[in-house]
Length: 305
Image 1 (tube, rainbow, N blue to C red):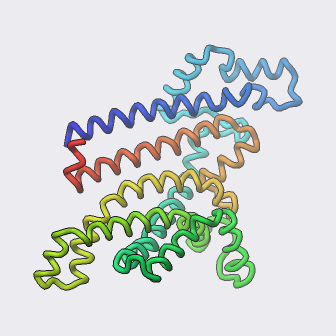
Image 2: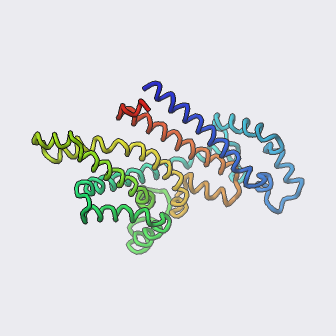
Image 3: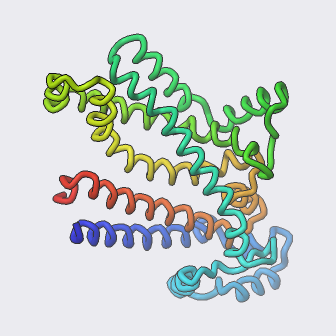
């Protein structure tokens, strides 16, 4: 287990370094960051001043090492728009994004779990097709369009839920549904295929032959083994949800990391954009590492890979 963990940790560190390089270079590849910060109407002297102020006149590898070292200490520079440290701005907003991502993940699992079980118990029947149709419908609809439909129905027509904001739990209901429903098909198909495979196993037939009640066989024996791959998928989907929250937060005006990224792109606030890309990518890497380790704990066969 220790060797497996160290291998996964080394791979995660390699991916993290690669992500940091890509995050650093994205801003440079898109154009001269000094011009982007100064604006199109800036003079050559102003652009040169900004280039010296932010160190853009130094070699790229020097800029990367300096930026990477400061990022390790939690220093992502200062936002030229907000005139505040980037770490402070992100710290104020990360809670909204993490709450939305966790709620959306919980919604996706709670919806897909019964659908996947029902579809597996009744394979290739109308029940199976209906469950698959309900799940796939979530992936067929663009999340921003689905969010607008929810606003029209629940906020404008019924007036049950607020349109935007983060003042109470009610503000998170529609964003959670819009973001979580999109991830439901992936969980549902994985649970369905895993349950079908497990239900056809010899030990399940043996358990039923011994006279164990069907609910006990289904939930204690079958679901326990079929649910293991969902752990890895949950970590991956949570990372996707944090990245996908940019669209949902923009639709519902939730002031989280995603909405901050959308604002910063429009304002050419490059330090904030760079920090958001790096943070979301590193969160994804850490979640993937934790899911690999947890899967190895749940299924010892994985450790020999």
